[in-house]
Amino acid sequence: VADRSLLDSARLGGAGPGLGGLADLVERYRSAALGDLQWGRLTPWRSLTAQFFDPPEMRPYLTRLAEVTMAFGPAPSGRGQALLYTGWLGGRLGWRGTGEAWREADGTMEATLAREGGAVRLLLTPGGAGSAEGLVGVTIVAEGEPPARFRLERAADGVCVVTEAEHAGRPILTRTVCIEEPGEAALVEQDLRLPGRDRIFEEALRAAAALAPR
Image (cartoon, rainbow, N blue to C red; front, side, top):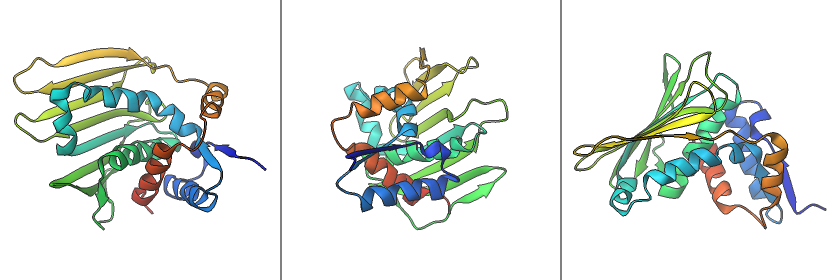
């Protein structure tokens, strides 16, 4: 009998069926915790995104996000990682599906979610043949006075990420952060240190599975 199971959604077929299958496991086996190495790989991206909104004056933008564009690498796991990132962001901010199907043009997939007081446009776009695996870039546009734009982009070295925050009337804030991803053994060790179920991961997984193109 195990009280924790660990999988890697990067190895589970297509993004939609893979995430959907994991979400079903979470619901079916409520007495055991489920971990995903793909979630661990997203930790630096989630942390850097959250840091944009750490200053008190930036927090109101969280309720006014209007567009999120995610670029992902050519590996099959790239789209799944982008969807899991979207599930995390949307789950935390209470976004809801609108019933619209994904639309696709020139390799870019687009969908619309509802948020309190408005809508959020989602764009999933391939990063190109030379891109790293997984997420390679995120751009978040927020409405407001003034509007704001937040960007994360993996540098050419594949290790560092350039972050950029831009809103009218202030200088663009740019920094470069090295986020070398841990290997599989380190990801396993990191997950096994968790004392119980990761509710934020489960919330993100459910949201991502609901969003995933069928």
